[in-house]
Image (cartoon, rainbow, N blue to C red; front, side, top):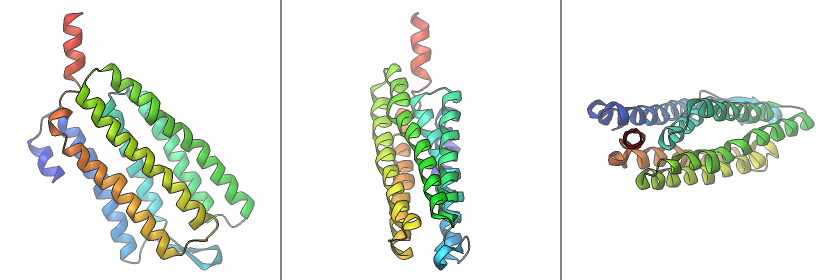
Length: 215
């Protein structure tokens, strides 16, 4: 659907469609791999660990942040900085999950949370302040919806990690179901929310150009 829309969209809208198509595409590959019995290994306690999920997150969360940055009209330096923090967060989560020594595991968890907080702050404050300066009600509303969807959904991931890869209190089956639900909402629903706002997406570059004309 997104690729088909991208083919007929103008350059301003096309970037959103391609970005969301890759988000859903990478997630689909990841889940196909896990469903096919690939992308996993056994870790301490003979627990099944799906490392394919972390490869998925490394790519898709970066694309989600890029998507949010494009909607907000944020500069690419700031977007890159937030993506960098996000990648470090995912890396820390992976290292914590495969750690055998308990103390090391929880240090990695703390490192990950230390990167998680600035990511959330950037989405809730920095990006939002930028989109507000554009004075485009439709883009402000769209950003508010997808940003808060992302913030709320992403806040559940550390909780699941804590009781799955952390304490190993959740069964692997429950872990898979929990992560799947979060992934569907934070990626698929997110993507279709942007695609459904087709008419608003073309206004991101028009607003600044219009304001410069009158200065």
